[in-house]
Image (cartoon, rainbow, N blue to C red; front, side):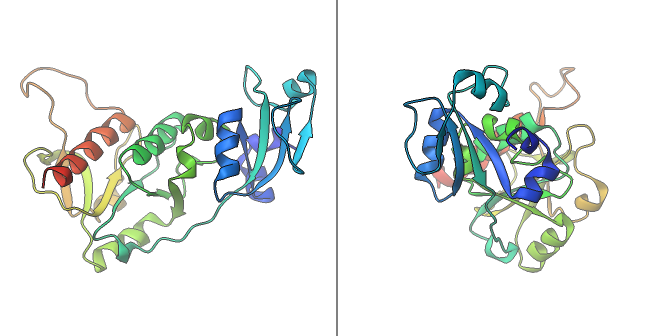
Length: 241
């Protein structure tokens, strides 16, 4: 059962995801998420949902190369978010971000910068992939991730007068353009950037400038790195006002 949840179809069918490690599971138990089952070595956890297993059994259950001392089956949460509520709230929107490591890092960044909601296109990586859950280091408990029709969501945001930001080579310098307190920050696919259909819904195009401008440099930044830079600048502006 546990190993089958490495596959998205099984997670969707059972409505469960896997979390590993004493610290993470302890945080989940203290959160609003519901733990269905815990497999743990003797003396790690107590409770009706806990099944004590041997080290050999833990090796068979764990999805990690180095087995942890506890594995939990957790119910996948479902949240609601309305684009019209975002004028005072900063939200990240991910357009086909498909690398689990990048998604995990972006969720941690959102948590660090006080962004409580991330909106993902349906073809983005699954935030309950075991690799993503581990990479978030517990941030998945505080950041709500929504999978939506991203075009429809951005249309709703536009109708509500919410600013929609995206990064482009022809965009305005991030450090010189005016930024709003709330809005949607759109980050694109690792290889292609923001797709053409989503680009049509961007109201403010931004550029993260290289330094110095005339120096030959890399073609682009990793999407998680770029997300961190943009979030930091948005938050810096708010804190300096």
